[in-house]
Image 1 (cartoon, rainbow, N blue to C red):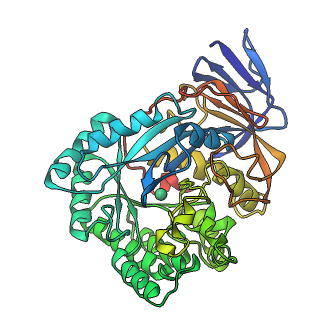
Image 2: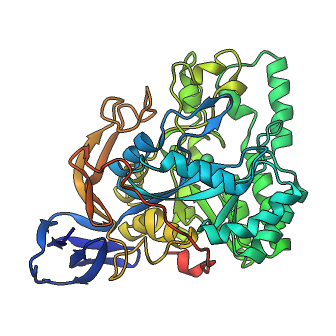
Image 3: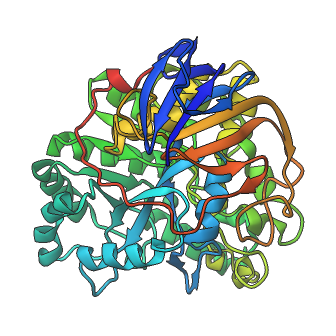
Length: 468
Ligand SMILES: [Zn+2]
């Protein structure tokens, strides 16, 4: 593949920004320094651009069955959307079949990814049926390069829902095995009760999705999961923190010195409850869990990023078409498939609303999208940083690039975009995956199937090392 020299750009890492060149040979970074000599390398002019480590999205759902349908994006279109947003590695949730093993879940997901992915990828395993056999199987994930499991406290009445005693035992097993436990923290019992009561009153519109899952049910489950992890003496990752009340629980855990990582997502900054309450059935386009919240929750969440209570920013990309999929819930909000596309918009949203508005720094942007993702998801320093020996996953970020999102210029396979009409200021001009150009100037140029599986190993980073 030869050599590439990224010349004249400004490198942005989680520790700071500086002028330097990056020399890449084959798939790796070989040196970072000022005025590097090309020595036969092809020179890439990075002047005027910010040179960043490829973004990592630790939270996607590609080609995933949910509520009697399957996500609109498969591994080709889903990773194409991701790379068009500067993402070079995703970690996706392989879903255990209720009757199946965890190993079979991974095999199934490998089949979905193979020949399609244009980004590198890893898998979490989402546990749906925690039998004695499955408990015994958890430690074997480590040898497969899978360093995390996800457990759902929500979705009562479906196989995803997990009782506290099983959640707790999984935490104990994970601790012994060196596996990170991730939780979807919403109180499934209370949501099931409120949903039944709403439907009995004929409250069927999309906005009732949020009204039956208020912030308190997220906060309660977040606090409970954190306390269970404290008893099990294990690190925990709370995914998709959507509101101030849940964040408070995370903050309290940090005050007492507990290792609790937490993620938030672009939809909680770009949208709010008002979108869910749009006229007619439009709100269905904005149904995800936890639901969109009132706008006032955003400032506390930005603050959570600044002080390090929230260390990662994942997309929770889980796309469904409006026609034929979201429409499944036209008479009953509880049948609307949960999820929004966002892999493509994740970084541009964080830059536009965060860095451009002075809410977070460039370094925090890189930490939230890349460096902390690599640390928490067990890929550091192979991914998430620009140092000799790391994979040459590189984003040339153009802070002047202006894009207006429309369904036509999206790279995924969804018949709408919740971001329609939104103007992003700043975006990726070019994206390289392991030294190879994957996206340039609006076009995905990577070959389908060029993405590779990344073996991950969880070595619990200290809270200090993921605070910027
Ligand atoms: Zn998710």
